[in-house]
Image (cartoon, rainbow, N blue to C red; front, side):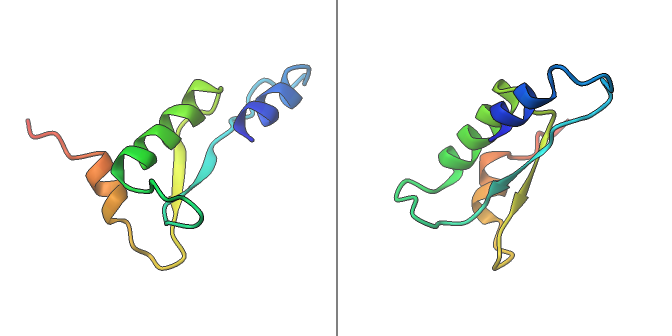
Length: 74
């Protein structure tokens, strides 16, 4: 969907529009769901022209998201 949205905006006069995708942060029809799945989902959104992303979980469970993007200590 990110790729399609970016393509649709290619001819727009307004060049300030940003595509920031909502990504699935829960296991629904995804047998391989986990940190690797989440990281790949985010990578694909950015690789297809998105600028950042947001995660959504209806149960507010974001453990796999935190595991996919660990905090780097200084």
